[in-house]
Amino acid sequence: MASHHFLLLAVLLAMACSLAMASDHSPLQDFCVADPNSPVLLNGLACKDPKLVEANDFFFSGLHLAGNTSNAVGSKVTPVTATQLPGLNTLGIAMARVDYAPWGINPPHTHPRASETLTVLEGSLYVGFVTSNPENRLISKVLHKGDVFVFPQGLVHFQKNTGYGNAVAIAALSSQNPGVITIANAVFGSKPDIASDVLAKAFQADNDVIARLQSQF
Ligand SMILES: *[C@@H]1O[C@H](CO)[C@@H](O)[C@H](O)[C@H]1NC(C)=O
Image (cartoon, rainbow, N blue to C red; front, side):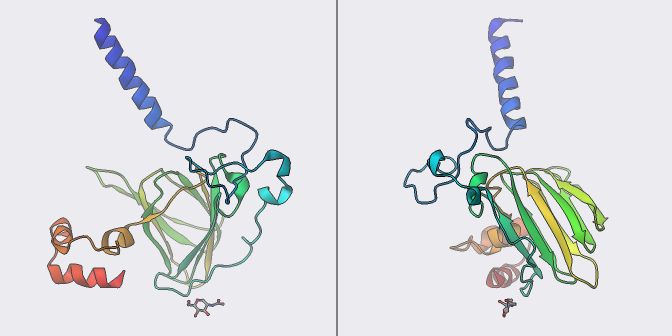
């Protein structure tokens, strides 16, 4: 193999590796408790002086409390990311409690920086995710108490409570700051609006359908 071919192969392999490890970077020290008051801007949050760190920096209380599901979608996410639990900074993990009213949904959304495992604590959920282009295959299942499902990083996914009672799930995520892009809000609720002719062509729908959807978000 000519040496420039070998170099190209090495570069492609390196790119493939960096894509395969597209989650938070590894910590370079025991911990880096987030200092929310630091003016320093960096990728993540600045560290509090380790000498001043205390147990409460690694602590969050409140996931025993049900979220208020009285809203249009009938669900509530209570996040525990580095924002709520400063000790998560640089550790590459986060969690959330999700409450669902009867027939409530957690609408289609993606986490740009995390894969997610979802564990059902109460009730039954119809869950699914859609693979990327060109297949756009829906992979879905009904989960019951104790069941775990994984939503791979970046893929659009959703949950729906299929029961007459409330449902509760715990999500574990592979980023201290997974991010959430709710599809309907991003597409129809951006500020300012995406020009309606763009959305009309994208969704193959009339302008008035798009205008109505935009007015909902
Ligand atoms: C839940 O949210 C609704 C709508 O915002 C509000 O009217 C209601 O008071 C809230 N309930 C509780 C218990 O906070």
